[in-house]
Length: 324
Image (tube, rainbow, N blue to C red):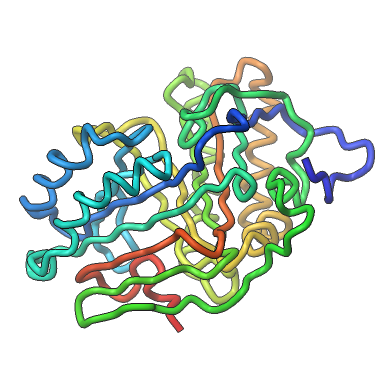
């Protein structure tokens, strides 16, 4: 643990846990697959034939509406890197077909490598979410959280690697309907989740009345101010089961120019200050009986392995708006 930024004699404001993997575990990758607009029968067939039942470690579904008013359905999958590459050799045939460009909807996929030295997780309870469901276990409480720079401290390579942005985002391949982007090194990806499924009536009401409204304001700010915030894309999604039934969980899934963009927002922007204050008030009110589960995972892109593809999508989708 680098512990480059921890204040002296630090006393964390609330308990937190993180996931740990075996030292010999194969590297991981998160892959987001999405459809923009009304899902085509071809998409639904591909999901059932190829994605559901695939050798991924876990598969989740979610839905959201973007700033342009388009509805999206997405699947969040976590893989062993080699298993994904083997699977993609045959699953990619469908994506490569020119038929995808004429089906009346948009498609996108975003491949996010998760080298162990370049990502971290944090959870408000010992329950695993997201990539942590593939971990050997959860450990905690931990000290390295709750202060500016805590996420960087939990990314082991931060001790000897400069994690600032390297270059602008550019397309490496583009046609009228299809764009492939290789994100620059040190692009930062966050998935930050909220799970109220275990909350009782009073706690549930408190979350919806006091915490979620300021969370939505923070997500809205990041979505609408990419130049000011450095956040190139932020999706606030409602999670669902694989049949599409909404769950009592949400996630913010965002891409920023580097980890410092998210860190600066968390450290000083009024929208995040409000989120932190309301959460700490909730901790003070419900204490150890609080059942709300909050978590996140942060990955800083390596130089190779990430690729983002957009087919027949509007120009504000994902990283398309960031192309220089």
